[in-house]
Structure formats: structure tokens, C-alpha cells
Length: 251
Image 1 (cartoon, rainbow, N blue to C red):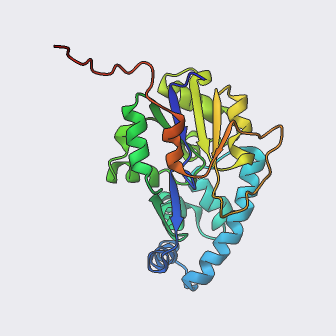
Image 2 (cartoon, helix red, strand yellow; image 1 turned 180 degrees about the vertical axis):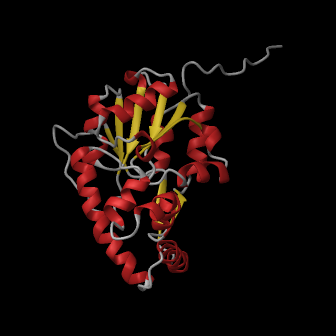
């Protein structure tokens, strides 16, 4: 299949979550300071987790990602003054994400991304994520931004996977026809159906062999390929035909 662009998911695909209690504790403390509550950081964040589950249920049902101000004033801390909380929402969302752990790039992640770019593929990111701040900062800090022509986050775009609109927007920004795009994700439920509806030419699912998948593949969500290591992408995508190899001089 002729593929020009490779789009990557973030969570459990390009990046993984690592538990770090010191890091998480600092984030929980920052959250209660920002909100202005006397509750224990641990207890307060447990309350946030329960409310966040309700928000995610709404987001899944409506295929929407609420703006961060709405997330906090409507869903996570509605009992606090919206006028005070709304301006803090971006920072609160960032810290709430940090309270879950640190995100690090997959083993061989940079090597694979660099190789795919060198091989001539246009690269992009499509991710369901509640923060508008974290990903741009990470791309800049780790010098990853130069690899990706198209980065579409549900927190910014407003729609979330599996809505085909988010895939179509990413392909549009990349300047590549959907039929010549592939998406690499980790979730059979969210990452296959929308990709198909958007007309992407291929979908690949990365599954950890040590973990049972959330859902079994069916006719509706059957990917083209299932891989178990991120570096397997290098076996699937060789040098792009449009890339000219340097000619060897003859004597």
C-alpha cells in the first residue's frame, strides 16, 4: 500500500506513563494550592479522579473534548468560583496530568521517529488529550517538534477520536490524501473505526503482549496490523519511493 504520511498516537504508543511518587506528590500539592482548598492533596485528587471518570464518559459519548476552563468549572471543581478557576485551568490540567505520573518516550522511540523521517515519510500526531500545554512544551523541550508536520490534539481541536474529523484535520494540515496515510494507535475501540471512516489507507495497533487488550478485534475494529514493539514500524515502512538515494560514482 502506498503510504506517504504516518500519524502516531501518544499514550501507550509514542510515550508511556511511568509512576513517580515524588513527581506525583508535588503535582497534587500544586493542585490544592491553585484551587485554594484545605483538603489533603491525596484525598482531593481522589475526588478529582472520580469526577474525571464522569467527564470521560460524557466525552466518549459525545466525541467532544471540553475546553480546559469548562473541564474544571463544570466537571472537576464546580463548587469553586468559576471566575477564579477558569484562568487557572490550563495550569490545573497540566498539574493533574503530572499527578498521574511522568510520560517518557518509548524505548527506541526517537530512533524510530528519526528513521521514518529520514526515509521520507511525513509524520504527525493525533491524540485524545485534555491538556493544551503539555504536548507543545514536550515537543519543544525534547526537540521532537521538528519531526512532525501535523499535530492535532483533541484539547485544541475540540473533537476526539474516533470522530473521523480529527483524522481528516491532521491529514489536511500534513497536505496528504487520507488514503495515503496510516495511523498507529493502541486502542482497538478508539483508534480503528474513526481511522476507517476518515478513509485512511492503513491502521496499525501497538499492543503490549504483557497486558490483555481492552477489547477484542471484530469486523468493525479490525486493524491492518498488530505489532508489539514500536520499533517494528521500521520493518513495515522501508525507504519511501520518492527518496532518491545518492548515486554511486563509477570509475
